[in-house]
Image 1 (cartoon, rainbow, N blue to C red):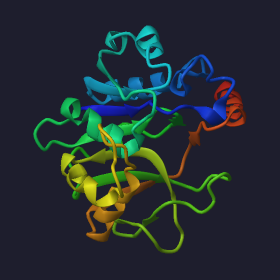
Image 2: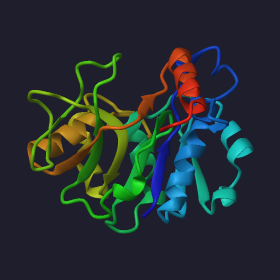
Image 3: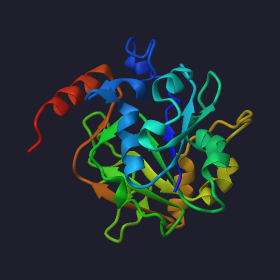
Image 4: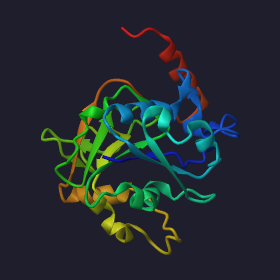
Length: 235
């Protein structure tokens, strides 16, 4: 399986920390946030990883190199000065991700978690498999609903928050034009969530609930809290 790490965000809420460092390269626990993911990906046998970039794109190869220190081969895609959003970024990276119709893994470069990537299904039952977490204080409304049979729905009671970790089939992206109004640009810029909702309406998205540690490192305060958490012995 190949993997995509979303790393193209502008990191505007993290300034001034991101004035000279892209958010996924900020340090937590003595290493860049993205390095935690690269270690996990290597541990489950992933060898080819795409890192999409925009803001301060040149810093990624400077810090991460070619990935050989983790036993990986890193590929960098540049989306220009304006990121292509999650859907557009995934579509832009697809030539490097797709092996026929084989699924691929994708993870947000600005989250930290103790989730074990080995739990992800190599062949999801539908078009996508998502990891969901308990709603954090900054996102109390949640995103999607996980039912007792492991299917994910767009609406319903007791929503959970999408963790930014999933396995996707290339076919998920086939209907991207249906989710875009007007000219999406070239390359196209669009979000992934509307495509996921289309698939959910057809019962084609499965998921799981991760009830342990997860942090969306979206502000300097949350990064500081994560740093303190990682410094404490875990029992």
